Structure formats: C-alpha cells, structure tokens
Length: 331
Image (cartoon, rainbow, N blue to C red; front, top):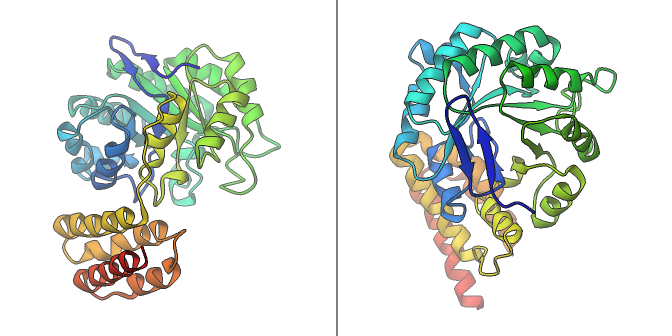
C-alpha cells in the first residue's frame, strides 16, 4: 500500500506524505480546528471550509484564504460557485495566498448551495462543470481537484462520463463520495462503485464516505483501490482521527489517542481559542464541538447538557474542570 500521494498540476506537482486527507467541512474546519488536526497529522493535506468564489472576489471571506500562509503543512482551498470567471479569479487569489491545491466543490448536497448552481447542482450541468475546470486549470499552476458524488440519484448515475470529461478538461485529482446527491448522508457509501470509477480514470482518486476509524479506512482502501481516503464526519469531535488512521496505514505503533482528561483539556483550549478569535460568540460556536467531543466516557451525557446550557466561557470551563477533578478522584 502506498503511503504518499503525488498530484500533478499544470506546472507544479505536489507530493503529500500521507494518503489520509481532511475533508472541507463548512462551519467546522476553520484555522483553529485545523491546528488541532495538525497536532496528530503533521503531513496530511487539510482543507479550508468551502469558500464562495464570487463573495471572495467582492472581498468577503478573504481571511479564510489568507490564514493559511501561517500554517504548517499542506492546506488546500475549496471553492464553490457556478461562475467560471469568478472561480478562475478566486483560484488565482487562492494560489497567491499559498494554497497547496485548489479543490472545486461539485458534491455538496445542501440545498442553499445547490440552489445557487454550485456544489452538487453541477452534476446536472456537465458542460458548465467542464468549463469551470478548464478556466481554473488555465488560471493556476498548482493541481486542481474536484470533489463530487457518484451521481444525482440512483436513476441518474452518469458520473463516469462526467468524470472523464472533467479529467480531459484539466482536473488533476478526484475525491468521490460514495453516495448520490439524493441520498445526502443516508444509506451506505458505495465503495464498490468508487472502484469501478477508479478503474476508468487516469488521475488519482480519493475515496470518501463512511470512514470513521482505522478499520473503515483499511476496508475502504481494500475495496476501492483508491489512491487515498478523505475523512469528513469522522473528524467531528475527534481531530486526532486523521493522524491515527495515517499512523496505522504506515504501520507505526506509537500513536496515542488522547485520554478522556486530555480530550476535556482540548475542549477548554478550543473554547479559549474561539473566545479569543470571536469574543463571547465563540462559546456558541464551541457548543457543537463540545457536543461531538463529550462522548464515550462516564458522565459525558450530563457534562454535555451542562456545557450546552453554560452562559459564559468561565461557567463552561468550570464544569469541565470539575469533571477532570472527579476523573482524577476515581483513578
């Protein structure tokens, strides 16, 4: 099994020393969360949240791409839009900001994204999708990837032709989520179908969908024969999972998952970082991360309830410190 990945761009090729990639997740994979992921996954390719290309051209969301220049390790920028000129300009700006790779979102099933003609809506408009890839691949020298799904619905799985056209247009890598747009996140990801697509394509294929642990990762790679895997929902509340999977695939035995106490200290750190960045509003943003992380230990459910109700960062941190103290008393 390969443990690194080479993506060839127009002028610049990228070698990633890990085949485990973090998925762009709106409202989750900001610079703070990426920093936590990076502690356990120093060599993995991480992605920003989705960036609207038109908004970026108007000056909104610039911080999302400017932040990556200060980060260690490879960070890609994912763009979504249906305006070829806007996406090409945004790709140039992203490249100038230090993007390791440009990804085009053609798979997001969220209605407000698809309604604007972006994300999975491009599955319905292959000619426009091809034009987007052509414009971006001409505009930048770094690799251009496309993240998509296996079709719009079970009745409309013409994805093979779609991918071949995008490959001819200049795409350098595909990430394929093994569900249709209609499925959303329901049902099971079709890893066997990803393998069928992989066999038809010349560029690297990354498998995505239903990878939550080491066992899933190994099974997915075995079935899909993909060049790598992308972890999406599996990272929620577990920023160490990418590093854990990467270590396992490389045969390393020294990976240490954080203890319950370390997870609780991580929540405190996350709250502090968000408060510093966003003010008291940061506590509201932290709540979803708290809910995802507070699991699989005695008292997790009660702690989660108390933290979600906390009216201040101090109140939330006091609850966590009380739990840490009780864990120490039991040990």
